Length: 370
Image 1 (cartoon, rainbow, N blue to C red):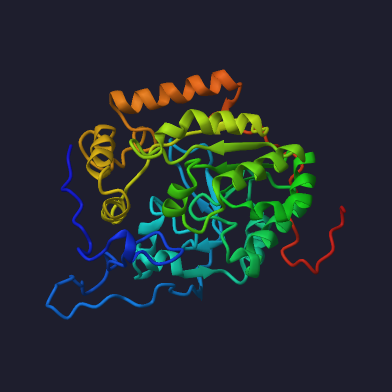
Image 2 (cartoon, helix red, strand yellow):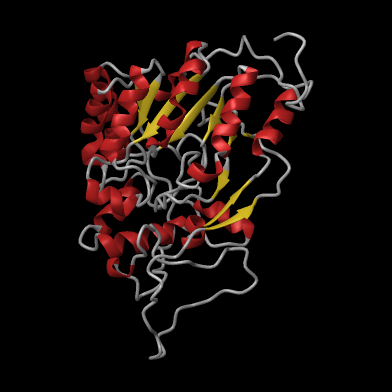
């Protein structure tokens, strides 16, 4: 299996052209766009002077809040994402191509044109109150980060946490932001009822690399401090050493597992980088701009884990890859877990749905049982 090399999106893009606080170096058209643009050097090209493009916020008018999946690769069947798009700007984010569904670019648009549901908590309340609803662990942040910077102002994640707490519904949070500590008192109450676990993503311990890979996310040491505070508060906490990028971040694998164990994490997970659809070209453009001397090697190593391609979407392969290099990464990870006494992330959090009770569809309605 092979794919064509990703085409450079714009031959003018270099690390010096990067927008401050943004991961992507360009803004290619949506794959669903009626018209496409192509960069041509006609002698009139000028540097883009907007070095700090502002974030724009729109309304997500979709009528459903819980997303269900039946993937055998994922240990949960439902999730909620408070936001579409993500200000963290992680260049490797597998959710980037979803912005094309909105007619927008998976590049800079994904980072600066965000969408939220003003009635997210109300929609969640109605979904949980449906007569046929059956509770199971709900993941907050399976696609985009529920604690990205815009959450400080909008509070959508906090509002949904309050609904889940009222319903005593089990949930797992995935984030790379220390903003999760804002909700520590509520998380502590949920943990006392075996209703919550938190998964902190730590891709690298190299601050400079982190600033380039995930420009608006909390610095790596800040994430580990957040893990320490969560664990000290009695909240089951794990670390995701993801994505593993061979030749770029994999050298930190054992160090991250050791650091996670030291600050109180109970378990860890590790997934190989995924580059679906437009993400292949976006990642290669970023890699050649920031690490030109390593780019060919990194892309070659990824292909060695993907049967010669930059991405494979088949179940059973897309998360971990295949081949000797992918197997070696998983062996290294397993050995690190055993050395530091951590469980695998996919072994389940043992959260409880026994105390679930449907919330009132209207929060003004009083319950007969509380």
